[in-house]
Image (cartoon, rainbow, N blue to C red; front, top):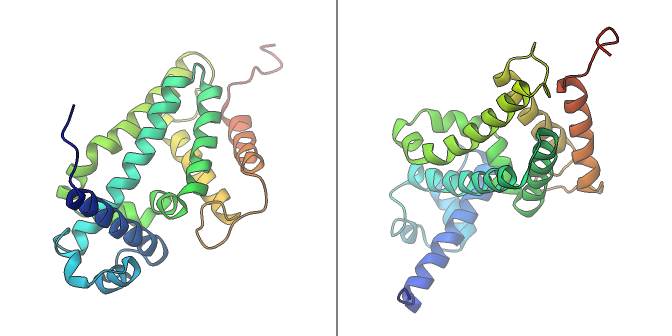
Length: 216
């Protein structure tokens, strides 16, 4: 049995988590460049000097914040992949799981869907290296699922896989963002099941391989 963490160690873990949650909110609402360490310290209710006991600088806390987001999403994708048999089941479960994540952690979901967050990350090879394992998990599962679905005849062959994945991902982030499910400062009154169904209907009706009249 592993040694029980001391009270001081548990406190350090809790403080670090609180700092990341504060940073997540500010980065989601104001972006990396619009957020200062002073604001993060104020939001987390710690002195600015205390932040330096946990993080080297703003870049460091930004990467660690994104890491918490990518880890959460990678875990969602892996779980959905393991539990889904066919492509439609995978897409439906993935969409619903991501919408639930958006409701449970709106700031994390907003960061994951922000193009600017990914652009900032791409500027730092070191940061990308630290997060690549989680990014690869997400990309590999999505690519394999879409590729297998095409090989099985479930998806149209005239649409590139990478474009299909990109369209699907941006469709639900943009659409649900407009309806408040992905924004932290407004919540949609529409049940998440209905929002997810709209995205799924539009995406699957265009992406699934359906026999033409001549083929049927």
